[in-house]
Length: 148
Ligand code: RTP
Ligand code: MG
Image (cartoon, rainbow, N blue to C red):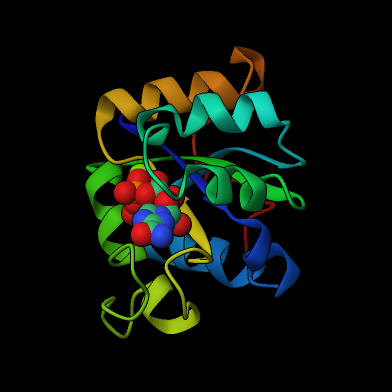
């Protein structure tokens, strides 16, 4: 089953948006299979955003993403990579549609609340950067006495 890497950025954690964002992915029907609060070391931030290392905003991006804890997650479900990107909205919150996470909660491109993998290849790379294999839990939804 397809998986993607989603992360509430430091601004989202500071603004108490973790629960709201988790709720949106749960309500959509995706399954949470990995999660942790993490203060990203600079080296990991530079690896994660390696594709942007020549961009003028790279230093600012790394400073921001390492400025406080992020909430890193792995979500699973059909077409989750693309659907999650749609739920996040455009990179610049000023252009992101209302109803999307960035459209509803973001103001500036530098602090846009959430990260999500942009392809299947990125998802695999990013999940491996942030999670050990044993910390991604594959489990069935159970129809048992304790779900009510
Ligand atoms: P992300 O990787 O964080 O999920 O965002 P994205 O795919 O929508 O956008 P991407 O092009 O990968 O850019 C990564 C992050 O860099 C910051 N950025 N700043 N100042 C600027 O012009 C600028 N452009 C991009 C954003 O915070 C973006 O999320
Ligand atoms: Mg990106």
